[in-house]
Length: 221
Image (cartoon, rainbow, N blue to C red; front, side, top):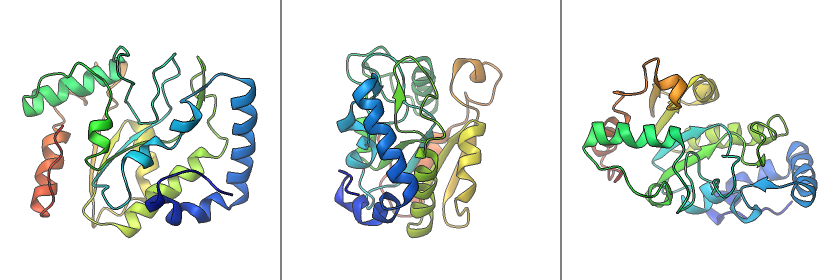
């Protein structure tokens, strides 16, 4: 089947799009988008890939589900559209960047500025029903995003993977740690962060130090 996605990903992921599980997923999504309120808007389902090409990818941050509130999800993990109140997890991410790198907390929670620098903001599930967290889990998206992670682990080198929380860390099991840097921490959600293991992780400075050590440009977080 034909999926509208950036060309650098299209050629590499077409084998997945042609598999029976993805055809079933596409049929499920067609029905969901025609009968339910689904986030993000259809044109933004593959926004993470369209904003960050395969060749440019230097950092991968794994999320779980898109935000399920009105106007929040923009197809990038942990990101919200301009003008939308920053969710608690994103606030904690910005607080850690402030502590780690001394950068002020930005007014907008839109992380497109990271994506265009080579940060792939990948949710395990790329769609969700309004107000129903996890509603599109176990429909095929996880199989697809597992394939994406394995593809970039196998075909690229010197990437930084940020795995926050047990779910992301389990999903990152296919990453080749001999040629990539894998950073792990608790999830930035308030409930997880209050028990320790999020604040003080210094993932953002570690990522930049690693990239620079490999002759790659750092990310302007």
